[in-house]
Length: 344
Image (cartoon, rainbow, N blue to C red; front, side):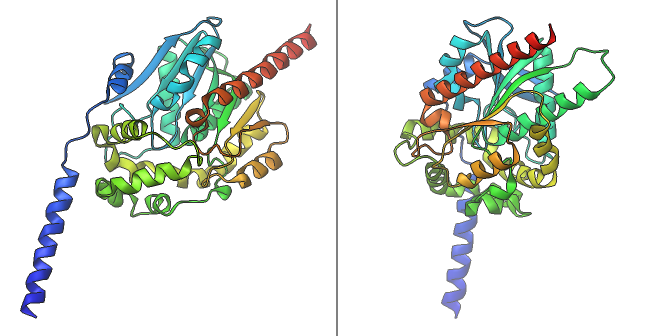
């Protein structure tokens, strides 16, 4: 019994030291690609916090601006494979790291919310003097996009026309759980949404292998991230101790349930075109999402990619995403011309 007691003390001390060491281990250094991404971007202030963003000119019409909103748990660097293609079509391409993500600040005891993320984006666009945007979003960013759409629709109904307000020209979503009844949670995802989430995320550095496995699992079978791509994702996750905030950020899943009708009605009542680009090999947003989307939003459109494309279409198959997005934009332009002609 004495030996059992001593062994128990030994393993308890060993585990405590291991947890402390992993929680306080230095964050990975930025790769050359991430250093270049950081150097070519800027920061702006949201209260006491710094938010990272990119705002780059393109070859399109000056007033054609695309806003890219990334997903969970990654960053604006997700858009790098479609960035050049977007610059070829738009006059400006804008993307930010949402608060708690990427190179932005990641306060640990913050009450993260979709509503705040939308307000931060509105403030950024106001600072950049952007009046109209096309939105391209993914995952978590889909819900932020729908909140921006909801606000735009509310402004259209308002009698207060005294101030210039952001106009949305179209919304293009990708593989997001904006219909919470369709989500198939991975075990780790579910735990992060519970009251244990903020505590479990503090131990997340213990489970680097499970993060890698979890990320790989949501990709298609032939489009897994390379070791370098995975390292960049993990580096940006751990930047500013972001892995410790995952549990707090993950409460957005509960927001999706609480405010489902607000965001569903935004699409149903939308006065601008809404489209979904969908990777069907997604174990989280299975084809049930596509079926429910078509059922709830008969006026909205969609593009289904190759059946081996998973949760990150713009990373796994950037050319097909650009093709689908630009085809949708052609429809948007024709709709606008038709509406204008009807008013003459």
